[in-house]
Image 1: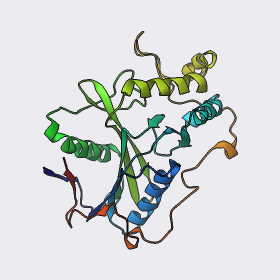
Image 2 (image 1 turned 90 degrees about the vertical axis):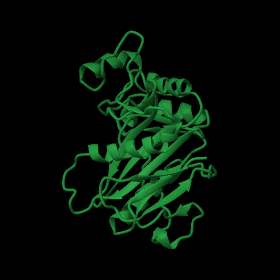
Image 3 (image 1 turned 30 degrees about the vertical axis):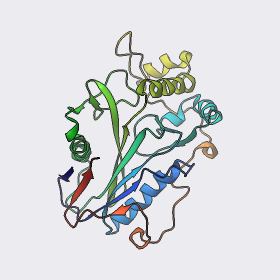
Image 4 (image 1 turned 180 degrees about the horizontal axis):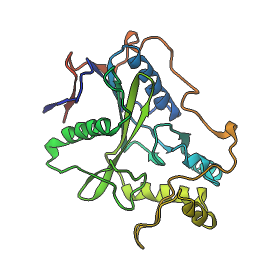
Length: 277
């Protein structure tokens, strides 16, 4: 069945780049760098993009996660376990990626009428898109922070109280990216345990109360739901150990001039077409 989802403002044609079957790229920053390049091209007058991708095994930290006292040691441990690691610049806390997680990036122009910095309409657009995609399942998709979930946020998406999606945003001068990580299969509990182990090492217990008292760490919500470290002030930072999503970009040719088996254009109207099997 085909559903058409209408975005809340005029964007022109939307191209669909589906890379979910390509798990050959080991560097997780490749997809984030591709998002950056596509966003730059969209801001220069190119079409809006819906980019879908997956990664075989990675652990992606937020910028503030990378500044935690034990972040580098925790990152080295994850790499020893076979995880590619990186720091993303779209906000939010740490998330693990694997073939059961679908990453969805909506890349849209800001337009002359968008002078405010309010991200809520953009997040609502992503929520509406995912709800439209899941309409045929008969499930109700709720929004709101889920207690005890990893990478918690106001725009957590859940079904029956179980979080399956988180949303973040990255803005450039003339375009922006709304990114969602969607747990399509596999164990959310196992992923949460991996994230918890990262924070246990990145922010050791003796330092947590100091960080919490400074306002950088929320209090636990309940006795059964220990808080996850979300932010912390930098202690000492070695720039050589901080990886940037801009370190590697694909060729700078306009992307619509480069053939790609995943490209399709649903039409000239500002809509994204989903096909459910």
